Amino acid sequence: MSKETSKRLQTYELTLRDLEENDIGKLHQLSVGVGWPHRPDDWRMLLKVGQGFAGCDKIGRIVGSAMWFPMGNDFATIGMVITTPQLQAQGGGGWLMDHVMQQCHGRRLQIIAPRVAYRLAHALGFKAVSVVHQHQGTAVDPGEISLPADSRVRPLKATDFTDIARLDQAAFGADRTAILEELVGRSTGTVLEREGHIAGFALCRRFGRGHIVGPVVAKKPSDAIALVAPHVQKHAGRFLRLDTTQPEGDFTEFLERCGMQEYEQVSVMTLPTSTEPVDTEVHTFALVNQSLG
Image (cartoon, rainbow, N blue to C red; front, side, top):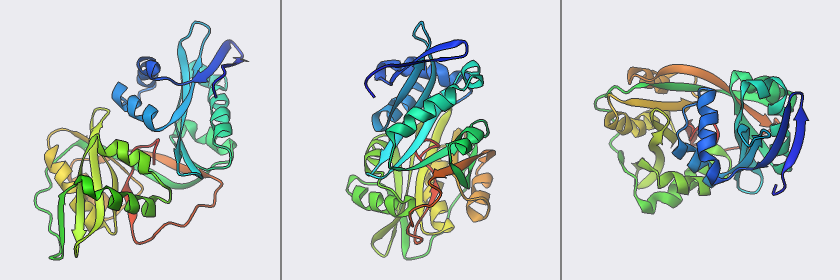
């Protein structure tokens, strides 16, 4: 969308326009206003890998935002749907979502909806398919993590990129190569090798109040634990976050032992409700974030 679009919502006269890098300061103020932890640099990364709209009032203040993130030719996630409380009460979120969904026409869609957005997404036809458990807290060193004799965890190298992109697509079900390229440049990473082949990986980067671990892709919980443990050790005593769809079991018990208690639950919602089959040999144990899945 290159043209500006205007609409009156009760007491608001709004203009909708494309997001630009010059908006980052205003977008940061908007997200702070609703209690989201995104730093200006977190917004900067999202603008590099996605696109979206700003809803502006008559004096140019950004009072709403919505973004979408293409992954391959047939899939996208929707995120950063934020409105001021006044605009939300007047239906601004629905107006922003309508425009995003027009841009995404023909793609399978996913949105990770906090409680405040669940009703809107449901009204637009999205159905809940799983739950994300947000774990965070002051990291505690887990100590030594044992691995089978045929496995080892080592730092990520540039030459590993093709392998981790393949694993990510197998686990997630969509091509996130462009997003991974941006993430790798901002992250430290670990890979798990088994019998000479890469069988999993984890990335960790600055985000919000501290650092976030994700994505994490592995075949089983013990592999995911071994991949995450070096990042927890590195950031022991500091704020660390990890978002996972694992509801319980060894992996979540490990997170809690490492000081990352469950903080919040949000819903993964899709449209249409049928999803593409993914490789059940590998699983996404941690999200990139709630906008990118």
